Image (cartoon, rainbow, N blue to C red; front, side, top):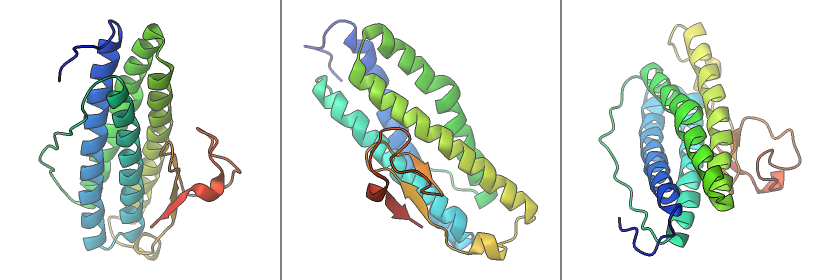
Length: 195
């Protein structure tokens, strides 16, 4: 990636956006594979959660890619080899990834973007961070349900469930109990339904 023509100070923001783009692209691929495994194991509710999170990660990657292009960069993901375990193992891997983004990656990127006064980077990083927090909450709840069922596909876990994803910021939820997206204010009726 060349930084020729990139303003001084925006070089770090561009590198952070490229890192976030690659991370979100890999999360999309990973969660898609995890959804397939959950479906094979009879956990349709968890498969839906993985599909919804994968869609949100795709939205985040797209938002980052737009800004990367505006800053003169090129967004090409490098998808890593995906290790697929059991659904229980995959949930733990997914939760660990979300926790890293919540606790380390996005806070660091936000701090740098604040210093660079890059409002567009702040928007895309804050939007992704808010969605990742919700993903972590949903993964924790799924792990708890799976633990309570002793790893068996109970009627609840075997039933499809709807998840809703904001098409603008990727915010993901089980309930549409709001008029507008809590993150980006998109009307609730625009949310995508994923199961």
